Image (cartoon, rainbow, N blue to C red; front, side, top):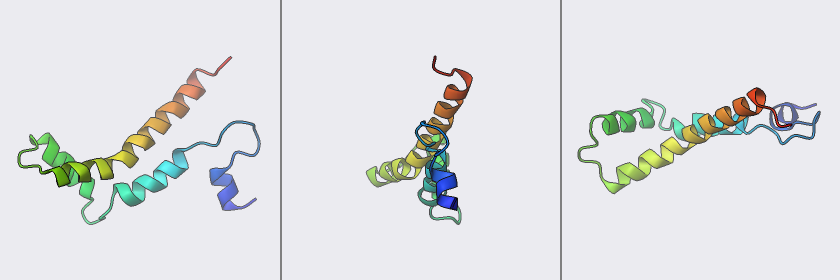
Length: 88
């Protein structure tokens, strides 16, 4: 079994594979780019400071770099829900 099959495929059960590894890779690449310092951190600080002077491009940038993180946290919550409250 290859690394790809272990991480991205769930061949032992009939369940759909977890999206967490995909969203983690997505978050670590697009979500943190550029890496020195991570762009999303500056945008979140700016937003928490009142977002004074944010232009439409800055809002687009925030959405672009923030979407992978929202998807990752959503997938983690979804998997936790499935584990804590299994379907009957």
